[in-house]
Structures are given as structure tokens and as C-alpha cells.
Length: 134
Image (cartoon, rainbow, N blue to C red; front, side, top):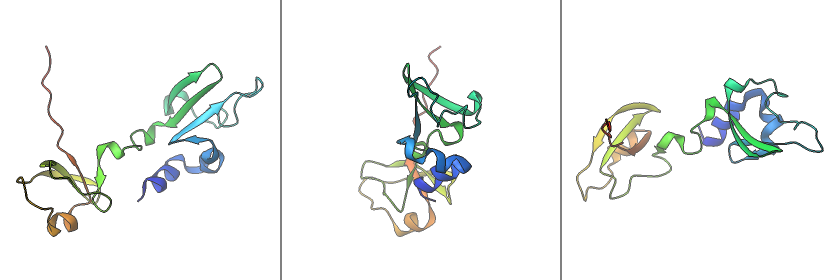
């Protein structure tokens, strides 16, 4: 699935109403002449608990359904068919068919193998575990 397909699917029945009002993946709702925006989430039948809202000014705001929060960067995952790890990406986490699989470690100087390309769907740098402060 592509990013665009995911976004369209997440907006579902609302896609046709909101697609011309997008700012990235967010819907931009602007009050015009004291009238509520036609893409205001309430007008579209959504509840405040179903969206993430970012105020811009007193007449406009951005919103997205909570279901697509993280879509702008795919929650930090890269599709292997689109971008491969760089030379400095040694400690990785990988997915098989979009489902977390396991850590994957490379030795410095090793090329990305055909095995890696054909058996995994996504990768990201391994997240460092940060210990509590107190």
C-alpha cells in the first residue's frame, strides 16, 4: 500500500469532501465570512475525540483523524522498495509484510544483501532505549 492509498482509505467516505482542502495529510478548515468551514470536522460528523486538531489562528485550524496520525513519516519506518539503509544504519528493526519481525544487525562495510531485500518489507534505525530520569 502506498502512503496516498493509506491516507485515502483512512479518510474513507470523507475523502471526496476533504481532498481539495489538504495541507499535507491534514485537512485545513477555514471559517469564511463568519460561516463554519465546509470541512469542519463537526460538520462532517466527527467527534473531537476522533481527531487531532492543530489551531492556526482564530479562523482556521488543521485536523486529521487519529487513525492516520504518524502517516507523514510512516511511524519512522522505510519501505525497502523505496529506500535502503545507508552505510551508517547498522542496528535496525525490520518488518515482514508490514508486521514487526525482529532486530537486524549489520557489520560495518557489509552491503545490503538480496536476502534482506527479498525477506523484509520495512526497516528503521533501532530506537535507543532511554532510561528513566528519576
